[in-house]
Each structure stands twice: as C-alpha cells, then as structure tokens.
Image 1 (cartoon, rainbow, N blue to C red):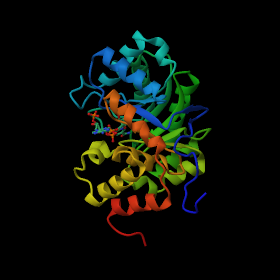
Image 2: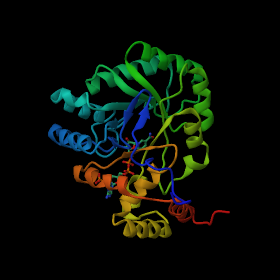
Image 3: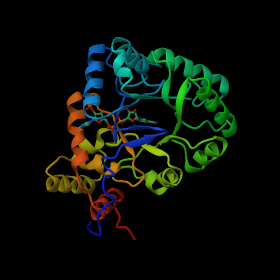
Image 4: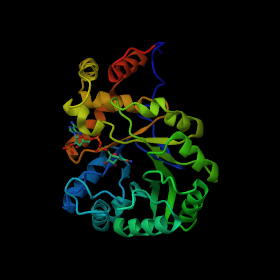
Length: 304
Ligand SMILES: NC(=O)c1ccc[n+]([C@@H]2O[C@H](COP(=O)([O-])OP(=O)(O)OC[C@H]3O[C@@H](n4cnc5c(N)ncnc54)[C@H](OP(=O)(O)O)[C@@H]3O)[C@@H](O)[C@H]2O)c1
C-alpha cells in the first residue's frame, strides 16, 4: 500500500444499520414527487439492481418540488410497495418524523407516537426499518425522547433509531439515555459542505459505531452544475475525474464514501439512469493527497 493510500475497501464495504447492512449508496426520496407508481417502481428496481438497499424519506417530504403536501412522498412509496410487496422486503425503509408544520420541531411523545403511526400507514409497511428524528427539538428532554423511541421499538413499530441534523452534543445527550448506540446520524456532507468532518459529527460516529448517512452528497446538484461552488473545487474534481476516467459526480461521491467513518451517500436524483451512472463512484481510487486537495479547494485556503 502506498503511504498516502486510504484504508482499502471503505468505498465499497457494506454499511451497518444496527444489525442490518446496506450498500454505500442509497436512494433519497425528498424530490420524488412524481405520483406515477410505474415510475416509482422503475426507480426502486434500478436502485436495487445497483446495490442501493436503503431508501430514505421523511413524513414532511411532499411540501417541496411540486409535491402533494405533508406525507405526499411517503404515500408515493407506499403505493409502490402495495403494488410490489416483494420489493419492500428487499429494502431497508428509513423515514423521519419530528417536523410538525406549523410547529418547527416536535419530539414530544404524543406527537411522535402519532407521526410514526401515520408514516406506517402512508408507507403501507408493518414496520419502519430506521426511524429518524428529522431535526432536534430543543424543548424535548433527550431522556424523554429516548423513552419514546425505545417505546416505539418495543411496540414493533420501528427497528432501528437514527437522528438527523443533531449537533455532536445533542447526539451524545440522546445516546446517553438510550440502552444501545444510535444506528445512524444524518448530516449534510459533501465535497462542498465539510462541516461534519470538522465539528465532531463523524468522530462521534467512529467512536460509537454509528453510521453517518450523508444528505445532499452532491450539494443538492450544485456539484453537478457548478453553481454556487468554488471554481477551484470544480477544477480539482474534474482533474481527478480525468485521471480516473470518470465524471465529476463519481469523484464527488467517492470523496464522501472515502471517509473512515464509512458514510452512506443518499442520492437525491429522481432519474434511474443517473442512479446507474452514480455507481462509477465505487470504482474511483482516491488517496490522501486527492482528498486533501478537495478539502483545500472546497475551503479556499491551504491547510495549516
Ligand atoms: N435530513 C435532512 O435534513 C435532509 C435534507 C435534505 C436531503 N435529505 C436526504 O438526502 C437526499 C439527497 O438530497 P439531495 O436531493 O439534495 O441530493 P443530491 O444528490 O446532492 O442532489 C440531487 C439533485 O442534483 C441534481 N443533479 C443534477 N445533475 C445530476 C447528476 N449528474 N447526477 C445526479 N444528480 C444530479 C438532481 O436532479 P435530477 O433529479 O434531475 O437528477 C437533484 O435535483 C434526499 O432525497 C433526502 O433523502 C435529508
């Protein structure tokens, strides 16, 4: 191994979700507002063929991108599962609750218990494989939240517990009250947004065996279009893509996957063909120099 090589296999190795595993790339459903079930089925079948066995959605998805409103995107998935029940069994289905418009965040027991029931109904599943708190509710005591989540698990409504957009301290506060480590945490993480690498989020993951699920791994498409991203970052990604004989998307995703916390990158595309081409990321070989080049270009300053 070259001295600047990264740990082998971290790009392709299966990711742990509690005592389950999933592929390093996952299908995100925030933008999946197309109500045509045959389209959803095509997207799900493509994801499966490409080894993407985790689906991430949220009860609040449906309010953006021309969706039908709160719960709309869960309903779209539910219709697909109802039409192809065997497909549901092949995925880990992850959803989120705790954003309760017009209330920004509600992680009270009363609200979450009802929200979880409604997600189960819309998704047309018997159990949610991974239930995540979408954003922290500053007015929920972490031990009350832990009791609520463990109650849902004991009742057989959810299998694994995750969080999203929690600070490392909020993560610790909840973890301390839980009887076992969280399965996942979901921060925004991409070559353009390095916060979890620096604020302790990914360190917590490695210390506690928690799998990070990276949302917006292409910065919501900005790494594809180049809009609102430092030109020097695009140049470095393009240079590495040329060397690897691939495209910038693959290099940007490989950067996320190469972190030793072994993140899952949640892809947000709604196009089956883009799900297929994204798997080129698993063939990209980045070393330490490449990753630090990306970090310096992303931050716009040399590392000290
Ligand atoms: N926990 C949270 O608070 C939170 C917040 C945001 C997102 N998420 C999760 O993360 C998932 C991904 O987020 P995201 O949608 O922002 O992810 P992303 O993969 O960073 O961005 C996807 C966007 O990039 C566009 N895009 C343009 N060119 C592309 C190309 N060549 N390949 C792939 N995509 C291209 C896609 O358009 P096309 O559809 O036209 O391909 C889509 O609009 C969501 O679905 C959701 O599950 C979670």
